[in-house]
Length: 108
Image 1 (cartoon, rainbow, N blue to C red):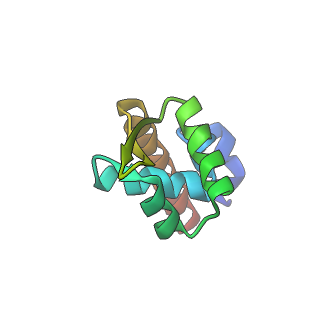
Image 2 (tube, rainbow, N blue to C red):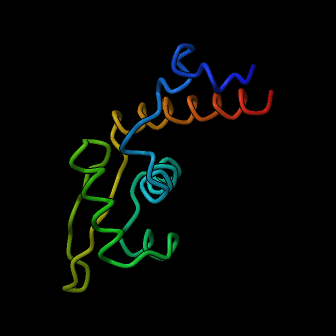
């Protein structure tokens, strides 16, 4: 029997986070674990996303409480800095554990 056939009963979907299912939001969260704060410009460069797409995904993470935003001006230009919250960090850990369980079951 395929272990994925009984996934609902065994709870292998437990821990999968709806917010972090999207590849860009997952990538943002992972990037933010490496640094205290990351600018919009750097995220855009790393992820090669448009302003609109990146902004929408950052907003979704912010609305969920996974990230915070700090805005400042540098040389009269606005700069937005993003940081992972404790909630975001915890949800990312749980999501990654759930993905590892799924991958492990798929390999059996």
